[in-house]
Length: 478
Image (cartoon, rainbow, N blue to C red; front, side, top):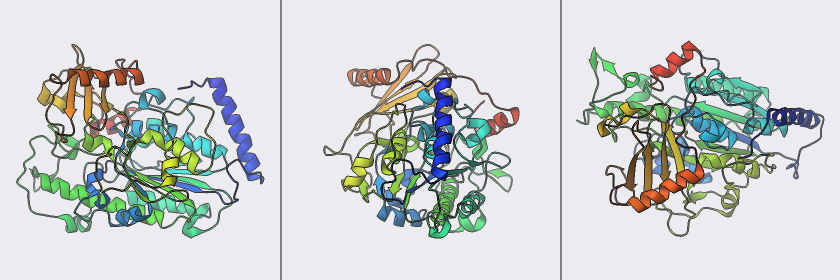
């Protein structure tokens, strides 16, 4: 990664201002060879599991719109997040850097001013920029992810905002920009919409729950995070199905929100629909939760891309959120900024077309397979079944290839290792580290080459007491 000094940062901002002024006076920036410039919409479905969407094989009607949208989109079957917490994952989308590079490693960390964001780069290229947020970890005071956005709408109290309000704010902004309902605008726009609705606690409206309400499953949850606890008639609900029903109902809500937004933008718009991470339901010791492990139901995410220069189809290569920044720039016909990005552009493959195959199919020999790196916060309560005592200010690291996943937990008395054979144990239930030390060592070397300082501690939070309490109520801090 190329470091940027405060002086270089100031020079970039001056350049961005001058370029934006020249664009407003009629001087088009590079990438405008054909006259009509492509807009960008990024929709983040916070906490939505890929396997709870119909496009990825789910059999409940959670995503009828996205299932239709997928017919004109590139659908990535092997997309991964870099972190299972909201702020770090989105900071990676906005910077094209891994969390240990951009510095937002836990919810509540603040993005350093020296990092160039996608919004800043697009603003410098003449784009209108607006972001509309739904969850407390994305507030500017909790993340500084507002860098580069002319409108960063995080004006809500408490830990969340109903996505129906968020989408109304976004549509109002589009109308102000003259871009709604396939209208014309003198400038292209970048719209980011963050829907937090599927994040716990799961609180759908009664009419939203009705189509999903089903009898108890008989699977009784022994451990439920305090923020997720559902009480009916004074009794705590512990049957798994009650929680799954509510979760699915909220995914159906965000599907409707995505439909409203996507149906309101012009045709010449690049649209990305993604999740920042997934959710463990009953797979782990700590139920109905995310953020402190790098298991596949949390790191493997939905990712759909549609628009100009994108050939629809199913794509089987391994890709990550860190790849979105360079991909967007190439698909928009823009030059990369004067800094190194950690991801790779997916644009050449998107223009060539998908490799086919069914949802969940193995990447296979014909697809590009590389090592995926992901991280999570350290919290020994989430892995208490292992008996681990962890260092709270260090990180949990994961390295995954097509067959193997190594997980490194920061133990108080030395690092703790788990290795999973995903080919024979896709649920990551049996640690085979002792029998496959050579494989584990190779993956550990990959982590060390990728992040030589991965054993260091992370910084503490610099947020207000009120925001710290909101993060605590969501299980993110003690």
